[in-house]
Amino acid sequence: MSAETGSRDKINKKLKLAIKRSKNSKDDVKTLDSRRKVFQGNKEVQRTSSAGRFSKRVNGGKERHQVEIDDKNRFKSVNSDRKRKRIYADQDTGVNEGTFHKNVGIPNGKTLSWEKRKGTMEGRANAGGLSNRKRSLKGGRSSGEDESDDNKSSSKSVRPVRLRSKVEDATVESKRPSRRPKDTKVSAKLSNGKLRIKAKTVDKMESLKLDGHGDGSLKKHAKSKSNPSTHLYRGQNKHPDVSLVKPTKRTVKDKKSLDDNSVAADNRPKKKKRVIRIDPYDITNKRLDDGIVTNESIKEKDEDLEKNITMSKNAQFRAIQPSPSILAFVEDNLLGRRRLIELRRSGYNTELSAPLDNIPFSTSSERERIEESIFRNKLTFFAAANVSSSFPPPDLPEIAFAGRSNVGKSSMLNALTRQWGVVRTSDKPGLTQTINFFKLGSKLSLVDLPGYGFAYAKEEVKDSWEELVKEYVSTRIGLKRVCLLIDTKWGMKPRDHELIDLMERAQTKYQILLTKTDLVFPIDVARRAMQIEESLKANKSIVQPLMMVSSKSGAGIPSLRTVLGKIGRFAKH
Ligand SMILES: Nc1nc2c(ncn2[C@@H]2O[C@H](COP(=O)(O)OP(=O)(O)OP(=O)(O)O)[C@@H](O)[C@H]2O)c(=O)[nH]1
Ligand SMILES: [Mg+2]
Image (tube, rainbow, N blue to C red; front, side, top):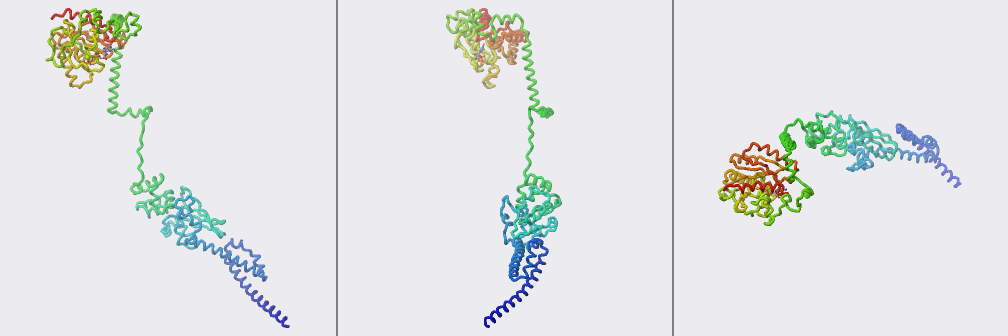
């Protein structure tokens, strides 16, 4: 009996427990229904819930237990949903630094989160829940987000955030903003486990921020379009002034449009002056220069005129047609530039220093071959004068050799006498600086005059030489002839004409010697002779003929000896 009563008690206890559990299960069903109503609005929760299984399970004992488990799971899911909300809250409060905050501290990372780039999430630290989050997203556009939250204009300009979520772990994908967004708006999308957020800004916000950080003058342009690049820089940098420091070309342009007097505009780099390079080979560029009259252009024109004159002089010289007699004389005496083979064919010894003279230097026996006896005498230096008072007494008839520097005066003395080293010569103009007197035996005196014109000497010295020469040729007693040496290549120069005029006035006999004939063509020797004879044909003191000589080749030297020898022979003491 005791066993039966014991078993009955156990059964009764179980029945009581079962009844209690059935009552509790009804309460649970009520609570579940109420909770189902709570989450009725959440479609995703309804979709995920197994409502059919839930209704079956509420009838059975084990099933009820399962129901409780499922309810726990559902609670878990509900809790997870709550947790999701808490996650947002935590995220908003900064407790749960998930993917939202991972990139916030990265200053230059390419994977900057969207709030870092757009600066919209800065103000969410004080926000709580989704509504606050929306609010923060509305107002949080730049580094001054907290201030901009209070700003109505900024809140108007931003779209609210849309959240679509059925996920437990929300991750944020940041959509990289375009580099040049025109109208940027902020929107957040939470779907398929990823929160996609787009941020867009409105121009007014930017202009207001400029008001806050820049000059007051910027307020004038609050409605004007702001620069998107400044948005970008301001979003990345909490200090908008710093972002203004590193502007792009586009920011510079916009700053200029904002206010010319602003500090930012003053700090912009100045434009470099555009340099126009004129191409000398470009016809259009030359046309620019044509209208400009400068001193340089006048000088160039003058130089061109002088060139034309010189060219005309040369042309005139080329146009001279020498007389046949002069041409014949030039050809007979082998004047002008000649080839050695030509001299050899004519019977001259080309191994001699002056083959056309055919007389070697220095030895007395050879000097006997000189046709003119007076020039067989030994040449001796006896006086030098740099002033007229130091002139030697005029005991002998004198023949002077005058001319420009380096024309070959001293060389002419050597060529006439064929004596080496008595008269010094040099290729440097200005060697002879005094009037040098040479005796040729006891019959004749040869005088080497300093040259005039170009010389390596001071102007005062050259002037004194010229004055001394002028005084000598105009006042010297015993001066029988002045041999005026003219370089065949260059012809007569103004100084030569000056000296000729002086000798004309002083009635000093002078004879023209064309020197260095071996350096020009024979035809030019004839032309020069014709030119000078024509120019001096009216002169009275000139002695004809004009002599054409070359100390180097010896051409015309024998003829000159003959002419000058007559002076010594017939001169009256
Ligand atoms: N080719 C050539 N050269 C000559 C002739 N006569 C002189 N020379 C050269 O011309 C240069 C000047 O000769 P010089 O006799 O010193 O001339 P200069 O007139 O006395 O010169 P200054 O004493 O400075 O007035 C020398 O190098 C001579 O060799 C010539 O007929 N033909
Ligand atoms: Mg000389």
